[in-house]
Length: 360
Ligand code: UD1
Ligand code: UDP
Image (cartoon, rainbow, N blue to C red):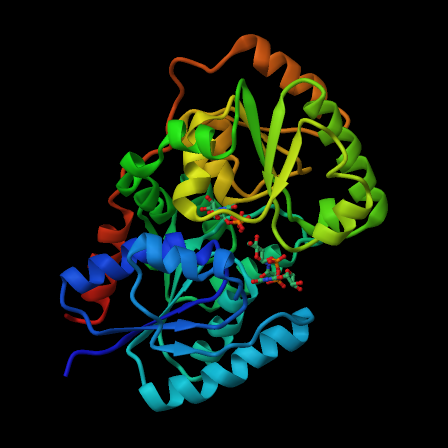
């Protein structure tokens, strides 16, 4: 009986990363089960991705929901411990840097189940980010480390990870983007949101921007200064929604705050945007491939390749309005460099390495 691969997902950014890996493993006939931890649970944060990306229904939904870091991570670990004990997978595969990722890594490694980490080696070197802690722990415990960029390989090497465990495979998030490109309909997005002229799409959810009322107020000031120049459409993540609303975010005639969008609708908007303002990880990568100028409201990024080989730049809240003004004046670049191996085949590369590892 071939060994089972158990995928653990739970939060929005996990789903576009897992979809191409699951599809490619299916093509190789590898038995698989998909766990949803329930970290994200709103229809627009979870189910819509399963529908739109052709992901299989989760075999198990742990339904943990929202809680503090310790409570959420612990609840996922408790649920997974029993599951891994009973299913006895040949490998657990985890994605990205969310709490579901690190929880599954801890459970798999303590039960001596080989662990594969998709999107290994990214480093912001900012230990105030919960994701950085999750990345460090997950990579330290992983047997197979799948990197999206050469800088990630260098970080893992510096941390003493054996080179034989590390594989530069490209970016499965970009597999999903390229596979769905024809569905990103700019005209439909414009019509749906009554966008008459140039527009900026924004996403904001990092604790560094939305958790503290003073940060939220500074962010609202910056976003209003952008909205003074151009229509802004902001599908807002539930985290910090209340704080941003209290800080007056919604109170500008050119600022449209809406609920999170499905993947296809979101990327239809991004594709047609004059610029994107974000603190998301994945959106920095997607804009890089779509050639849309991206302004990342963070002091650092674990994805520097989107700056050196893409359309991304880091900006402060203070500098953002001026940066948008310059961007609107300059227009989009005709050509831009693209990171190596971001070619739509990362899922296939990952699946082939996993199958070889399992001897299938
Ligand atoms: C998590 C990830 C972050 C990722 C983001 C992607 C961690 C530590 N953080 O952050 O890296 O960028 O997901 O979206 O794992 N909530 C809802 N409905 C949902 C889910 C969450 O209302 O379906 C609200 C709850 O109030 C919850 C808050 O959002 O407390 C935060 O959710 P959580 O999963 O803890 O972290 P995110 O900020 O979403
Ligand atoms: N996304 C989406 N709808 C939205 C906002 C984002 O489909 O309203 C997608 C986005 O295209 C990307 C993923 O969600 O594929 C990234 O998730 P998020 O920004 O929540 O997480 P991060 O990448 O910052 O961890």
